[in-house]
Length: 409
Image (cartoon, rainbow, N blue to C red; front, side, top):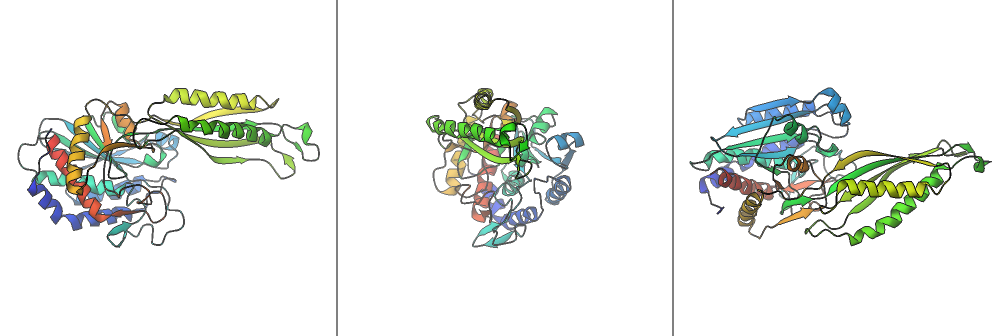
């Protein structure tokens, strides 16, 4: 499909730039930390902001038992629908929840301070800027000219930081939405059509306690866990040889992120628990990755008589790979983004994982694109002083709006 320019659409966005920045500031000022994930009250505030722009906002509260299973306290999914006639449905998904701010900030994490053309605040880049981008891109379609056919939906969810199981996945499983194409929250200038998957495992190493004066009468769970961890770290060295063929993905990764155990200083520990994070490149099969790790852990534990190692899956997120039908969306986004950015924008992958995978699992082609600097490092994503350049907010909104107009023409 040949990309088309729409001067009236771009003129509307130029005139609405201050309103869009104000919306982003209001969003950043709403605390949506996950954990703890008490996000229903925040979702109501987001809904009212969107209604202030003239949208009709559907509220879809998530059942309490599903919220608890996701490790959250409350959640409400928001859906906005803008219909232009019969035709394809394009969904735009961004999440309102954020990781807690942590330490090291030079500004209020919820202050939305603007400094040298950048807005600072938790969620400014990931991904409240995408809520603002998508909302104003939809508003701009009223200025795209005649001939649009189809619908655009805005999905605002609040569980991306805990996996997206009760956000996008629930919207799709309950058939609240049935899109033909989707765009998800972006991280950089690139149009992302592939990303890693992720496996989280919890390993509980069991032994038998004993007095520290007679340690041989027990089974040291920490010593056993150390043997398992040593095996995992040694095995990790070989992952560098499993490079993905997709640009931007790299090799699989393994990290031991949490460890706990022991009773007291003078007691042989009877239990040690640790959690690991294994990133899965698109060429790998998630089930095979899990089976390999379980086998490695079991073999290392068997070297200590009487030791047990119980493995529990916490999360298994499949990688995102391009689906048939998504090429036209990627090409249009790249073409329009290249024009408004003044440089060549290409498709690529990222080593992260996102809730975009739920759209792909439902058969919906999806790419990631939105406001943001060149990289997540430049955005300080998930770090102190998270920020987004406001010029990029404006440019990304133009690229998304022009792409939507072409998709619906």
